[in-house]
Length: 471
Image (cartoon, rainbow, N blue to C red; front, top):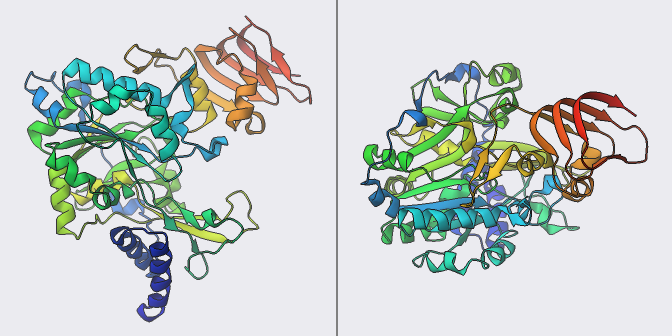
């Protein structure tokens, strides 16, 4: 598409976004991505463009934080990405409102973590959620149960909103129209929108004005992402603009974004959607690309501000082009592009960006009901401070029949008393309708298949050990 052809398209996009009262900077960020797409950019990064990483600094090798780390602690803000609805689990509210333990949601545990850290380190430590339009109201209502949380914010808001962007028709790149449900004309811009939203909401300037210099950013569904004084001391001492936490990839992480260097030696992040089909084997080679992005990031707010000011308020984040349908599970609906950016991709925007390898326990996200089952089980414990800690290093292969377990409602029906004991399980596969009563123990490899239309009930107190059964 040439420059003459794209101008009417960009005019239509700008008008659509203005009608939704989106700020000029958010419109400019999206326009930049559309121009790239129109020029034929796919956002793909071939393996020939990368240098694999062999070694990184490790958290375990860092010295204990000195007493002087209290200064850095007093200059830190926690930012939790909380825009996801968990639609893959059949949710229509923030995923962080799921029960993480009993009646304790993810947000409850996050609030408890923050309050404990404030008391432990005697600092203000503001908490800020980056919400979407869909998650803000319910999430703030849940946090209202912790008035002491808001009282300790020192005027920093508990929430700011990310933007939204139009879905584009694949054949014309025009904003898609779907009168049956106008919300389907829009999509999230990816968590790379963090940087634009910090500017458009005025939050970045407000944080700096209040003396905050560092931000620890993580996903709300990752309860393993705790504030670590050693990393904060590293940020304060060495002053990197950007620090990414990575962990060693396992077979379970083959499809997740990995860290590498470009041919000039600069760190970069490659997501699965940016990998050409012919390079998928190399992408999934965990020996070649060893480090997996946890999406736990540390930002130097002063240097971020300077970089944004130098570039008209934007970071040049790589384009991620996702092809979907207006209704994702209905291929009869029009094909659309969703243009996104990744928060971690900002690592390539700074000359002095760093990465640090951290233990696996700092990465415990919940993306599916299978992840939730593991979190509910005795493979994790939750401390009085709200910290989530693994009880075993042994891996667990978990395969739950999506017909009966993929949505949170059907999942809860089959585990009404909570999760079975999985501490000594190495593999659990459930195919068909299988329901668990209380105090069931799973050990070793357990594969159960129920081909009947009647639910199979695992009775209370049962011990399942190294079983492969089909009924």
